[in-house]
Image (cartoon, rainbow, N blue to C red):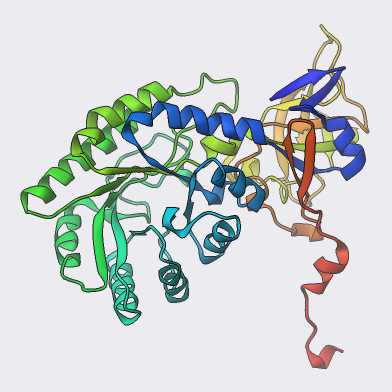
Length: 418
């Protein structure tokens, strides 16, 4: 979906250089075709298990992206009242929405109950009691799954690991059975099953093997106590290649489902996020200056950590590619690629080899479709970058660039300063 044509990098049939002239940099650009391709590959790999696939909205919350998946039949996994509203507005039926997250408020829970969503993933006993109380008060039966913390290390970055005992997510294994049993007797609840999610950007599937084995054993124990288990939500976490790695095998993932989950005869839910959108998006930026320091050469671009936080937050690697196709066999130079924000942490890459770059050149930051625009801010009073969705030769600005009047209008002066 991303290729050079007539010496310029294209997204599908749209030139990124042309977009840069029309929209100005920095901007995000997403490929509809790539997103559809990723979904279809996953759906095909898991076809025999008839899963409900729910897009993890936190990865990319643009309504055009959500609707692209919705039209393919995908549901939504949301973690806030705002994401729930985005999914509903984008046309995802409530019957395909799962509400996850450790800190659901009473207002968010009540709104989700009003919408008759498919499922709440319960993360703690206090949350369970609140959902039960609100549901009974509203004359509802909240469909729930209890999220298990399996104490499994996903061997991923510490800040995106969610399945270890010290992580804030889920209910520890030793308390699940008693809580599951107690939940059966709460009149506001319809206890459907269990959920598990051990982290993000998982490329070593041995962690899935361990987690799925544990939840399979747990379900067997629940059933031995005559506790019904109808659903199993295995979360997301399938990684993507950021640095030329071999993509993880969907066949291997399906084999683990076949081994541990299929024999349970439960309805299967899967909640991919990054896998569906990560490599569907790029962040396009223009080089402002090439600055020669005493020991380093800095490539200063007009995108910054407020546009793409991942390198600063996670030390994440993103490949860089010139939009203008470089000549073959050009000697590369080493650059520290940085943004304009007044933080040393506003660094995208250190000592990165690239062909010679000049001010005004366009660069593409790859693998920026997940946790890019969704995590953006207006730090340093910088305007939020626009997002563009491409389909074939068509493109549409699906989030316009914030303007200064709107940005400044967020602030309200008290009377004593007027």
